[in-house]
Image (cartoon, rainbow, N blue to C red; front, side, top):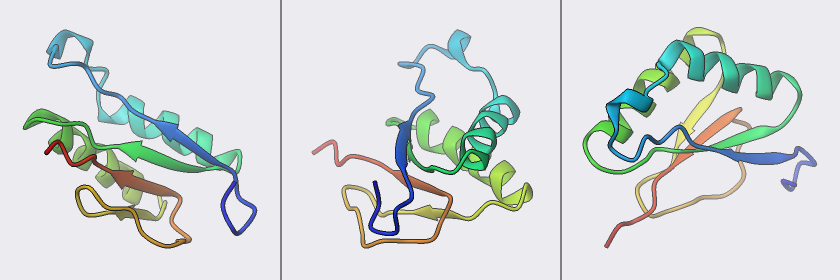
Length: 94
């Protein structure tokens, strides 16, 4: 639970490099929007490689289009509390 009392949940739509597993940004954004509507803040993995972060950007653009607040932490970093609905994060692969 966050300092503001809002629950935090983690999500990721990684495909392990298999494009056949892609479900698309509209479905992913809809799923995340429904989760946020129930109250929690979502920590969304940006994935790795060239495709993961690009796909996450498309999902986040759709979320912003739905009126949600999105914050992107720099690679390998997490920051202080935020009022964003969805926070993206990427581990430092190094």
